[in-house]
Picture 1: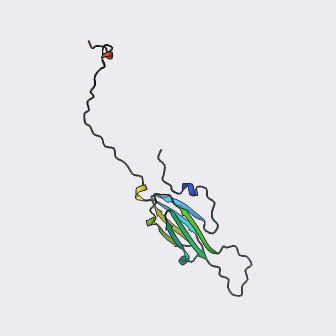
Picture 2 (picture 1 turned 180 degrees about the vertical axis):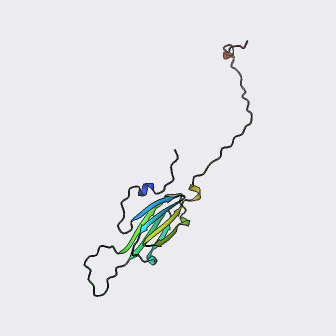
Picture 3 (picture 1 turned 90 degrees about the horizontal axis):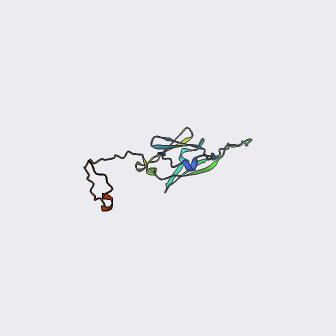
Length: 147
């Protein structure tokens, strides 16, 4: 049975969401799309590094306390957030694309050409073959003779 290539399966099967950087992961055709919620983050603070098979995402959400105001309730997390994704082989890390819109960072990670499924053709040579051999003398008298 053929198995669909999924380098994230063991890592994110039933992983709990991470506070500060919840993410979704989907596969669409020959690419994986990671969507990470980063509302209120300055796009200039987003930093993405790829090293070996690890993708590191960092972003900063600053606290903005206006002068003369006092916090009564403060539930939204602030500071620097980081998340690392350990990727399996078979992904084209040199072709990762990222865009940030409406508070969501989207990473597009294509499957490498070498990891894509492909058909393998089977060639058939129709050359006649002859089988040669000798009958052992002790078996020869056991073979029925044609009449």
